[in-house]
Each structure stands twice: as C-alpha cells, then as structure tokens.
Amino acid sequence: MSEVTAIEHLIMSQRRWSPHATGQFTSLMHDLILSAKIISRNVNQAGLVDILGATGSVNVQGEQVQKLDTFANNTLVYRMQTSGAVCAVGSEEMAEPFFVPENEPHGHYVIFFDPLDGSSNIDVGVSIGTIFSIYRRPDDEQYWLLNAEALMRPGLEQVAAGYFLYGSSTMLVYSTGHGVNGFTLDTGIGEFLLTHPNIQIPRVGKYYSTNHGYFNYWDEATQTAVHSFNRPTHEAPRSMRYVGSLVADFHRTLLKGGVYLYPEDTKHPRGKLRLMYEAAPMAFLAEQAGGKATDGRQRILDIVPTAIHMRTPLIIGSADDVDRVLDIYKEHGKV
Ligand code: AHM
Ligand code: MG
Image (cartoon, rainbow, N blue to C red; front, side, top):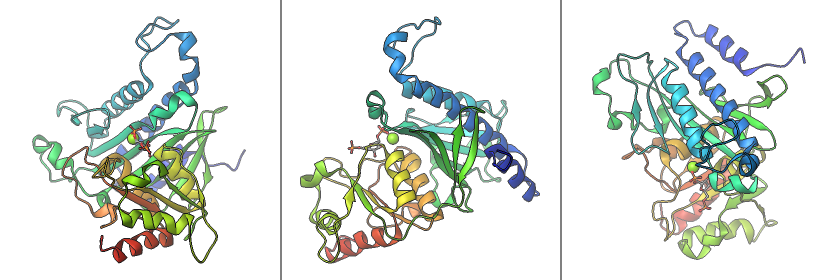
C-alpha cells in the first residue's frame, strides 16, 4: 500500500513542475473527482431505486429521487460552478452552456461533459460513464464576450480530457496531453489509485466494435470495412464486442486495441455521437495513447464545431485498424 500513487498526489506533484500554475486546474480536477465519486455511489445503488422510491417520488430520507442522468448533471454543474476554476460549463443535458457570472468566483477553464453516457444501460446493470473535455479560455478574451460561439473550439485545443467508467470497478482515465493514465477507485479509502500508467493502445487489436444491427443502413464503404474485420480474406476473423456505452466500448478498445465505429447511416446521417463531449475527448485520449480517431474524412481533433451539440461519425482505436477503414473508404471514393 505504501507505494501506491493517489490521483490527488499526482495532480499536486504535476502542479509543482509548472511554475505558472495558479492552482485552478488542481481545484477543477478535485471537484470533478468528488462529483464522480458521488455519481458512482448513486450508480451503484441504482438497483435499489425501486425499494427506496421510484423516480419523481420521495425516498426514505425524504429527498426527491431524481433520474440518474439528471442527478449526475446537477452534481457536475453545481461542483464546477462553485469550483472557482471554471467560467463556462456545457453538458449533453443542457440545451445551452452555463456561464458563471463574472461577479462570482470563476477561473479560466471551460468544461464540457456527458454526465452519464450510455444511460439506457443503467436498468440492466451494464457499465456507463461520465466523459469530460477541458479547454482554457484564451487570456485575452473579454469575459463579457464569452458566448456559446466562443466555446466552439477544435478538439486539438483541449488541455485535458478523460472519462470515469462506472463498471466492475470505478475508473478514471485521463490525459493532460502527456500520455494517458488510468486510476481505479479504492472504495475502502475513497481514493483513485494509479493502476494503468502510460496506457498505449496496441497498433492492431483483437476486436471490432459497432452496432451490427444497422448494417443495412450503412453505405457500401462502411459495409466493406466491417466485412474486412469479420470476413477477412488473409487473416482470422476478429471478435466483435459492442456494449452500447461509448465509455465501456472505448475503454476496452483503448486497453485491448481494435476499432470502434459509429459511422453515419441512413437513420443517423451525421452519425449519432456528439463531437464536443463524446468524440473529441475520446479522440484526444486515443491519440495520446498512440491511436487514431477520424470521422472518415478528417481527424476528429481538427473539426471546428458549428454547434455545441453537433454530431459526428466516429472511427477510433488502433492506428492500423483505423487506417484500414480509411483505406477502404478511399477505395470507395468516400474520402
Ligand atoms: P447517450 O449519451 O444518450 O447515452 O447516447 C450515446 C450512446 C453511446 O454511449 C453509445 O456508443 C451509443 O449511444 C449507442 O448507440 P446505439 O444504441 O445506436 O448503438
Ligand atoms: Mg452520451
């Protein structure tokens, strides 16, 4: 136990390396981690909701029971808003970003999150997660000029990104642009401990991951790309894994390698996933771990958002597997 590294210790020691650090990022991460611990506790009790009181009613403590995704959003927004480190917050659960009033404690960070990704999986006990993406407000930007448009920055400008996975254990995987580290929550001591230092995604993976049910909605290029994994001519077919929670599917892809595809299809002409709080943070992690992320035409991190809730196709994972999809797209004249 004496040799373990706790996340808060790591963040503090990294702060000492940066002479200009103001402590705002440390404060932001502290409040983000606290939010995730609170969400994780509630996710673990999700199955008890029926006996403790259904959504919308009052539980035995006399508290209003909220839907878990609303609860996760409220927890994160409140913690970020009061952290003193943040000037704006964008969330999948909010139509418009929230701007911390200038006369209240605020800092120069902007955070976007998907508070509870994969929430359709809650009722069936499957892993879900919280995804976050952090930007720094340019110092020369006038506070009163801050509006939704000013927040639409390409993913390559992220200063940090990551996710919390609420699975068989609760994990935090994040990067500040110097590689990717993974931490596991030790519930006994309430700390995230470094369990996966310097994660590197294998160049080629064991799995491919996509919603096969949409096969007939895909264009020929995507159908051919997927067939190259499950009906290859010169190698054994890959195993398919698809949970339907981006955090869980990406986490497996990051650790074991392979490719995750949520392409555009006739039902989702621009893809389903959201650029700013799903695709961009995962792309940041994938690249930091030596992998790739594309929408099929361009690098995800280069896309300049045109709307806070903009959707994008996503092909992400091992560099060689993503390249294989892009090569097939090129052969079909898609790129
Ligand atoms: P959500 O943010 O409403 O939970 O939706 C996003 C989820 C992703 O986690 C997952 O990869 C995808 O939707 C699954 O979609 P589908 O059911 O179409 O395969
Ligand atoms: Mg989501």
